[in-house]
Image (cartoon, rainbow, N blue to C red):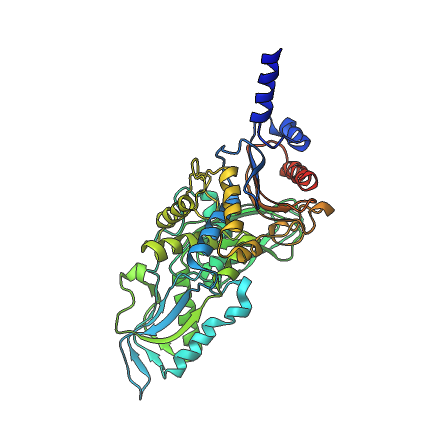
Length: 479
């Protein structure tokens, strides 16, 4: 009996300080989880002590919570006030009397992911018209050369390897180029009736993006199941799937296949519109093999918003383009390699130096769009604790996270009163993947860092989100 008593004491005191709650038990027992996998980890963000967890070291596809890694490292290594600059030069000889430029106008890309973005209209204004005015102010009236976009700032591999064909033609699969513009997205406008065949393409904006396409879309139901199939540097697109019926102006958003070339074309047209003749056809350094010569003269510059503002939009709206851009910028700024692989190396080095468990973290991109990504809840939670405890720019990081039930990708979720003002987190979603990671303030005054990733669930995603809501609600109430 004495031996049994001692054994029981050892078991009790060897047990972890947390216990598995009812919400977690119910979640795991739910029929939608029969073939699913859950990775779940909660850490006290003040003390660093584990609170609860389940399969916390299990590697799963994270979807967009991957952006928490990219944005944390970008803030810490580049700083919140870091900016990108796009410059306009002229090369060759300018005759000040005649206004004839015997050379080119060159747009030099500097990696700005947000140039002309609708998220930052107040910052950029109508920047192409401003460039035209600045060119006129230099006295340039005729250009014997062309408008050239020097897009050599990053490599010429716009999308990470492993992205799916279904994604890369659509706006959320837009690639990263040395010059990006308008979030590398164009709009296709449709009018639909109540019949599947009653569909009309009414416009494309910018119009230069719609030269070659085949439209196989039909109208059906109320949801958007339309896709654009295309590839970087390709001038042909295929529209397929279904879009909602009875829409006067339904917009399908697609990725621009060559943003640097588009910007050169736009500037060339605008110069022609004000009477400045441009002899040559617009081009890019990728096409010509020539970039900015050392003798080129600066005309004007356009600076991006600070990094903290870009990251706030990135995490609030889950903008894949910005995340991939920052990954390449990390490689460019810290290792001289403006590539996805270069940025991944920087992220891995940062995690290791921060003492974050990165075992089982397989990073393929910066946004989480690649199905080949695989990370675990424990590593995510440890990163969140690090940012709060040791991060130099935690306030900017925290400000980038959507508030539960209020804004960003959490606006339509977590509406129960218990979450109001107590939860800020990044969400992630892909087919059969739902994930959340961020911070919770409990009723007792604790701040918890949490991460939950679910893969391969069955049934509607709304049900899984409801289970996650119950899980997090219990944490807030009982801790």
